[in-house]
Image (cartoon, rainbow, N blue to C red):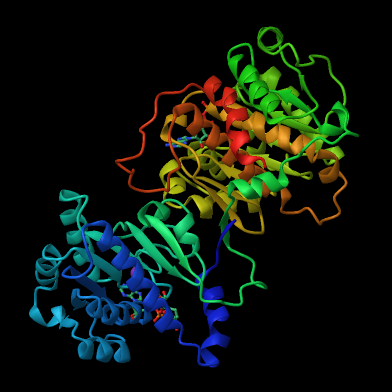
Length: 524
Ligand SMILES: NC(=O)C1=CN([C@@H]2O[C@H](COP(=O)(O)OP(=O)(O)OC[C@H]3O[C@@H](n4cnc5c(N)ncnc54)[C@H](O)[C@@H]3O)[C@@H](O)[C@H]2O)[C@@H](O)CC1
Ligand SMILES: Nc1ncnc2c1ncn2[C@@H]1O[C@H](COP(=O)(O)OP(=O)(O)O)[C@@H](O)[C@H]1O
Ligand SMILES: [K+]
């Protein structure tokens, strides 16, 4: 699991080490210099390269100034552009005496022009304007300098290397928002632990490859603010059948998805669920989707009976009054029994009305537009663009309002429960943005929840965070299946790797079909 801690937690965890005289900055600076040298080596060589440090007024700038001393020793010509009145005092003194060329660009009257001129001669730029001490978007002149450098770089995308110190300066460190200029990095060297903004959209896309440099911070007693599951985490929680199992103990999922108008959603949710592995899928719905499900998936049972979780609403339009009334009934029944339930598409509108509060474990699976509608219906006027600008904040708000877990779909899927860590999963490929992909995801998620259904229904509070972890796991597996189907290799958020395979178009059915292939590489 990749864990990210808030700025306040990092400060609290650093405090005892600093009080004990641990040279944290010296260690951080050495690691930073090593990574900058690595980028230079990959681009032709370290010695003789020119490095520009973009230095702000705090310890983030201090990290870079000390790193500059190591780079000078490795034969680099190092320039430091000071973009504030004051810079880290001892770092600056060390840099000057090591031979770093210091430019007080504020005094020139043209900080942007002077920094740009230095940048054009450099093979690497080190972004050390702000770290966890930043307040709000970058102030002037740093903001204009970053705008100019970003424009310069987009003209020459491969050059120079950009390495961010701790975080790309200007991102919302704790919430992943991007409210002003930010220089996109190739690599972010982050100190002690990842920061939420390095995992959460939209900021995560600006961080490039994230390297966590271990400072031995005492983080064990501090829960992460955000995390990303890895394949190993998913393997750990995946339900594996044992010799004593039979189909009812493996989990039975009830699907109330699809409608006369949108029957395909029923078949796709069933495909996703069946290939996730569970004891049985029961389908309930009108004639057209029922016939389609029987035809496509003869293993699905189409008579009612006991279930351990429900998926409601994929392929149901909110104006389909008869089908919506059925969904409301299933939701009330699941709530009464404490069964986990997935609310997708049309079923999300059940929660527009605050009479339908959730009592059992529930995962809502909106995309940005559906989340905006839900929040607006519940009195928080929100547009789709507001959600995409601050996905984590809006997902958390919706979780608090409804009491459910929100799985917010997008290129990075964000999961938020009313409490506990946020999850950010960037496992898919843009090829997944295709009709019906969400129905497959609902099926995967419902199947996993069915396996844990009895435990969740009997829970006395010890499994509070489990639906969120399961939701993140479903997003990971679904994303990897999409990648496998499209033939795309693993990615980080951000600039596409020109050397990576670009992949091929896929359908939602291809994603369901690729689930076993993806699981083969995950389960071990
Ligand atoms: N505490 C320590 O000893 C360690 C700190 N480390 C580094 O120190 C950083 C934190 O240092 P600080 O607490 O000094 O804070 P920062 O250096 O992150 O930021 C504070 C500085 O930025 C300025 N600033 C704040 N908001 C700004 C904005 N919107 N636009 C422009 N300037 C702005 C402030 O005036 C101040 O000069 C970490 O991110 C990390 O890089 C690491 O060296 C590890 C050890
Ligand atoms: N740009 C993207 N990159 C990667 N995955 C995406 C992107 N856009 C959407 N997705 C994923 O594709 C799926 C689309 O689901 P959804 O919007 O519900 O479609 P539908 O309702 O047609 O099934 C979700 O899992 C979502 O996270
Ligand atoms: K920075």
